[in-house]
Image (cartoon, rainbow, N blue to C red; front, side, top):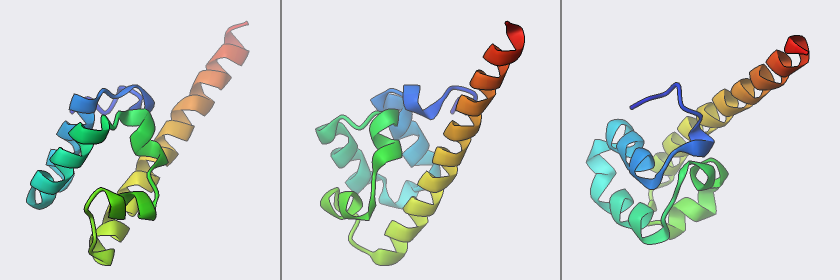
Length: 92
């Protein structure tokens, strides 16, 4: 998994790869949902608890684990965006 690539640019296949690494025990349920709904990196970053439930993640403990990991991805995405902005400001 290439974590240097921004999450918002991940393809469905890269989302599947991340899910496989993070949640191998729940891969069958998540794989079907990700493929069915074509969840790219941009969509992954927008998932909320009710979305996870609709995708078949019913256990609250599992939802919380995924939401926590998604929060980390969102923070990393924000850091990357701020870094891009700062580099644009200082390169002018």
